[in-house]
Length: 603
Image (cartoon, rainbow, N blue to C red; front, side, top):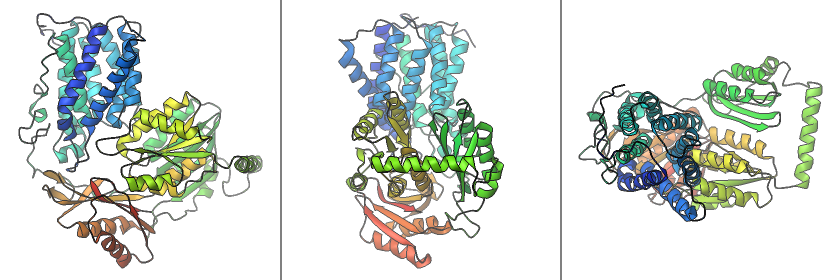
């Protein structure tokens, strides 16, 4: 680490409480000024990117909450102030980036615990803990994201702790900027879109504000991230941090989306609870859609994998799997959801035959089922739902099953606090547990953070990984209010994970997609999260999306119409579904969502 960095006159060597407050206010001002630019760092050329808006609203809400209680709870140490502010950030966190940022501040507070002021050593300890919290807060952490910027800042801060506070912040900022510039090399989707990671860009701004504050010049923030290499500079035309790569550069388009072949579910009796973390990590290595929920010795396990035997063996290593069920998601003839007879073999792998009577084990399960049935008779409503909806039509669908609905969509994602309030509202109706449907990949972390928060109040909240509205619709179709929350969780997660999803939308900028280059106004077809079709006619693109979704089979097509759906769209999709795929049922719902003229699900 070079030691030649010279701090300007008036530079700070420690941060006191007032300086930390100025840092927070400066960050809010910068996010307000740069929110549109960060929003534009969208991997898809459609107007649904809102990372900058989420970061601004997260910080703005937290500062307002902090100011509201400042008179009643004066804080005179940096550690206490950061701890208090982290709590406010968690409450107001919007989008995954907002939740991760709240965890970074939480870790920073833990790293400086007991400190009245923050010096370079405290900063290094805080950033190390902040990075640890950030990575722990994500179920499937990846390089090329906000986490990469956090890791780079933490590593350099440890090396720079002996340089003085301002000099350390200079090195930390440079490392963060370099990490941000590398994100397109780490995530191909960023390289294809020609952008750096939006959440990472937000974190760089947070660190730039810290460097300017430490320099004694917090009234002038560069804001352009201009000291990073040419791939992180402000693009003069687009007004966003773009990768300066020719649009026609070689790009390897994504192939047809594929997923694990088998769904594995079982109950797991565990004597040593510390084995659960290892089980969860092993299942994440084996596949996706991993859920390991429960407690007090009994856990529900769910995963989609290619090697079901390995998934069951992972359970054997952690405890005693029973009531094992294995379903083949895609059969050799392409039909999804067919039952598979591997449960018998998996039962032997677990030490007993899952398909036959297992003596005491079967008796125990039968008794448990009888107890559950009696409980359902006494208390007919054991489960409730909290669901996010981007349009009035979608909201009415979830309201029909008694859900507490949160309005959430591009530009106004649900905050952790909104989830907490909705969960409390549903719990107050007398249910034993609450199922949470984020229905959007970018609100998943906020939902999970809320579930953890209400657990401290004795409320059981379980999050279904419904990452699109059509997956949420599929999940509520199997919801049973008189079933136990964990049973609903497994059934609803299975329904959501078994729903392939697509969409039709309009490009708002030039971009390079897996379906080829696009221009503003082009019609884009999305299949399982990737833009694979670029066209000029919404009806034609919609038909192609349906055909691709049904290419691997399906029995039910759900069409959710957006607020700007064109005339004839329903007929086009029904014709496409029934012409090439006889026996397919088409359900049409008026969702009223913005941005996407049609959301399409295939079960």
